[in-house]
Amino acid sequence: MKTNDIMARLRAKYPGENEYLQAVQEVLESVEEVYNQHPEFEEAKIVERMVEPDRIFTFRVTWVDDKGEVQTNTGYRVQFNSAIGPYKGGLRFHKAVTPSMLKFLGFEQTFKNALTTLPMGGAKGGSDFDPKGKSNEEIMRFCQAFMLELWQCIGPDQDIPAGDVGVGGREIGYLYGMYKKLAREYNTGVLTGKGSTWGGSILRPEATGFGALYFTQNLLHKAGKDIKGMKVAVSGFGNVAWGACIKATELGAKVVAISGPDGVCEIPEGITREMIDYMLVMRASNRDKVEDMATKFPDKAKFTPGKKSWSVPVDVALPCAFQNELSEDDAKELKANGCICCCEVSNMGCQPGAIHFFQHNGILFAPGKAVNAGGVATSGLEMTQNASHISWSGAEVDAKLHFIMDSIHEQCVKYGTQPDGTIDYVKGANIAGFMKVATAMLEQGTV
Ligand code: GLU
Image (cartoon, rainbow, N blue to C red; front, side, top):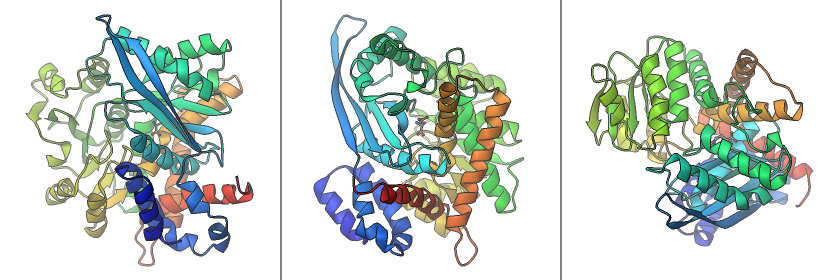
């Protein structure tokens, strides 16, 4: 396999699908050497098959807004790979959603899910619906209209969606309500991220952020450092950033910056529990403004418009918002301000130039598919509870999540340790995930 040849073919076939092409390139570059040591992979054309989704559903979603006007959006479900388990991955509601974005996310999800040690294939879905400024009733009507089409494509042993950007517990509730009406069955396990009174896993809302901090703690520990007392910058104020702030604070770090599309809030004394709770109010308001934190807590938080969290001096950077949110210039600014570690919590949160800069300037870096896998891993635990009609306590789920994150870190170390003793977490995560999926595909024949 030659990465350049495959990329040239994909670029010609999918012009303009930049996020998808970026994600594929990163994985292929990482695995090329190992892949070429396995002629049986080459013979079965594993890579050529793996970069194409199994299928993509595209559908129209029509709904009525509060003014009585008819609105039309496009809905998608990309079922990427089912070699190691049923399709699994979140739904993203965001105005910038395109097939390219969902293909990149579905591709990444396939390897991430493989790393969790649980039997889950990869998928992603969503819509170009923009939740910003929408009322609760509009969100509900949109979710119901979206499910009118999606329900035909999913099932507890077939494809299990969950949340992602713009889709949290509230949206999962509305989606499930309509699913139940259409399917006429109480298939609890068809969605994850459900409410805790109706089959949801305790700790699923916190899981992505908690898992990311367990991973970061392991990575720092391996490098002989302790997160306690470190200053942390987080981007975003959604579900993932919220969980990351809780656990970082619990572990003795100080979260000194959060951000939004409007700018950054600096919190010199570190975020407090009251402020962390307020992040949930900010998200539910659909205003998408981090400035609201400084308005609510003027003595603790200072808002600067147009700036990112990466302009604030910190030890650890945790991108928790959106793909490509951290550029090479941001990476340089972080380094100049003394940053020693960046753990990507968002999917593909760092641009390739930023990753290259981190890796060549002694800054510890780990990719999203390893760092944020605790979210989908806890979804996997939710599926297990649903299938066996039981419910675990928060402590039980947390212990399992911690164990899974430790094991993901170990896999990265196993496959990513370089001859000079340093650990390339990008290679480690990609090779570990790839080998598992490739082996399963090989064993299942040419399908
Ligand atoms: N959207 C999350 C992710 O990127 C969670 C997916 C899930 O729980 O299925 O992994």
